[in-house]
Image (cartoon, rainbow, N blue to C red; front, side, top):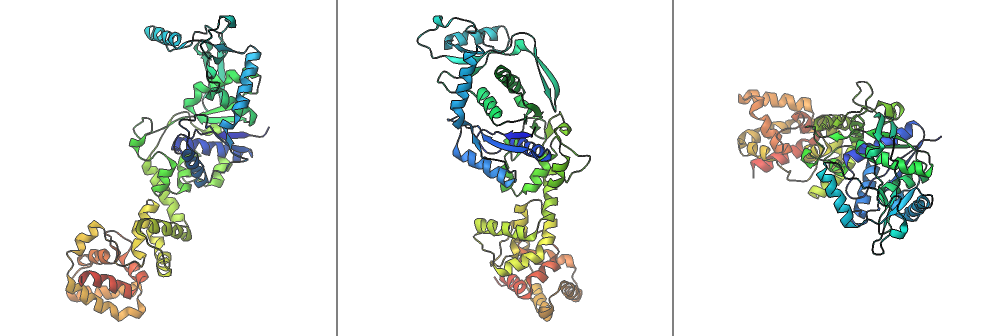
Length: 468
């Protein structure tokens, strides 16, 4: 039988990092087994579901390059089919109408609270004659869950899990307004989509036991389950905003590469020996659900940054320049011209080795752009205010001598000679040069930068500060 996995997000917010990892594991398992990876949008909550959230989820998946097979399924369009299944269950005596009033349900909850037990519906309408039904209450439809014995799940990740059926309740499958609940809709859609494996978070384990009641009642094949452990923050608590970015869009905006995020998410709970950097090709080849650990994974932002740094070093300069064109235009209204692009191509390799993320790279490379005057950081400005103008006027006169052969070796030699004649050390001027030609207090090797910018540009920048 062909493997069919699915990713089924609810469009009530952005694509969370935990959901993205779930999508990745489903996608990898489908690719590894030459199966299908399907996408279903669970948009039945009309109040909380939004078009914007749907778009954000789709954009996040596309950015991560997790391509789904076939058309997207929208759960809200299948409501008629869900209700038909509920009617079949009613007709076959496997579900029933419950006419409990709000007052009766409230009393059940209060009784459970007094007894210090979890609330469970007492099944008062399970075998009751409908002739007793009140006229003023629209009923819900409840499934008949097993009462005796145990229910068992052989989970691919968590192993064999048993639950006493006494802990199961006759949960609602159709609300009083006639709309199907999540429990019913998910099962019907998974069955109709021929899903063979349900890979999702450990927090869905209770749902799996409940949903299996519907599968068994309908005499349908139950998909194999794999419950992924949760992602926790560095402090071991549930991951939240206080731990930093938590959704895919934020990571993208923070300069994280999609390949880096994929690589890092892959290692959150799954491993292949001690390998930290794993190509997508190898991930597909090596991936298996059995290798996912049972314990929760802790999110470590420093490790993500380390992985991101690796991928930035490997990134093609043309892709970086494409990113910079958008970044500079959006933030500084700068359009890269041929001069700037040429400088970037000459200087990016060094900057890539120093960059933690694309945004940092963009700020570090900004001085290569031909927009004048350059942007100056607060730290660099402190040096500029202390510049000895006469020293740098003399330096420009000396540098002009190699204007037509402005190479880093020559620049280094002539500056060394200049310093010797002035009785100065390199440390006496290097930070001032850096501040005036880059606007930064930290940068790649200064002689490399000077060669890339050329004498005329160096002269223009230094003169702007010493004559201003």
